Image 1 (tube, rainbow, N blue to C red):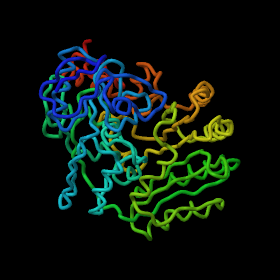
Image 2: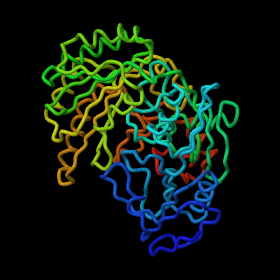
Image 3: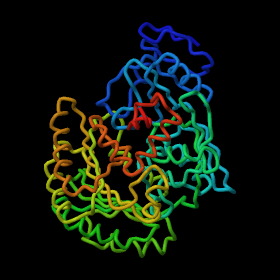
Length: 453
């Protein structure tokens, strides 16, 4: 199939069966867009792949013609790494095949799926795996970066449930990565982001969850933020593995609030006992915790994180949710310029916290993460919203533990922050990079330079 649109790459892409969209083709403008409205880039071509063979063809073409390569799954990356100027976007969105093996409690899922689509299929069998908190997020990007979710306390992070993956490497080879085949690559893709190739499909371990769990959220007025967050710290200190809960500062229909969102994936009587303190504390101005479909729990944050808003994020792992951090967070959120912005406390608890630091490429296996998510509608208000997020982030640096979640690196973060994302695993990751992508073809990511380069 040839790309003939004026301004596009103007060459044939042999062996490609999917749709190629050049700069003047119908559908190009929609195809080049990503979730974060701050990002406005114009690739030479968007290669909408139908399967691994198309990915191989696109990778080979980009390598042979020395073109920039961006890989698009769900396009949720806040830094806009799912697109690029002038190069090739390998778009996995059409690849939505999924097959559940209910007896083995496993699933094979192609990389174009989003978590809402994934959950729809696995919940038909009462099964699930740890998978994000926004249903529109792509399974691919979330997985290769680590993967937080409502089941991480009981079943670990998304990468802890990955059994195998098919990967197209920089030389155009399709290889399997698992504990038994290419184990170094399997280690690297579990948290090493998109540095080593294009994952075309995943095999996950599933667990008996749903269709109903106990979850939802409670809300308190923002002036009580310090009291609520102190309670949250103690509440999580004794939480069973089945319980995962996040604390957030946000603006609801009635104004700014502090919320605790929780999910308990165990037996209803155990959930009732574990969640009783949450429901009794305060009391809250609104209590929405109770029996809830798992698929609804998975969409709790969807309305707060819709597509095509302007987004600027900063995050860090903290030494702890101290009184100083609590006071600082409450103070900064009281001055937020956009009612769409959110500050979120995410614990690494239970099973996720007991995985050794070097077991996967993702090294952050304890403590809490704070995410500062600045969202706004009007591009004219970009400066004040970015300044708020940066000021908040600067203020928490004395309490940071020296790490950052790779999936939340923002658009203007440098090599030092990338190293912090991978921590003690960085040097080993450079060796894996040198083996599978020695020329750094896949560099539009939280980039790990090949060893020796």
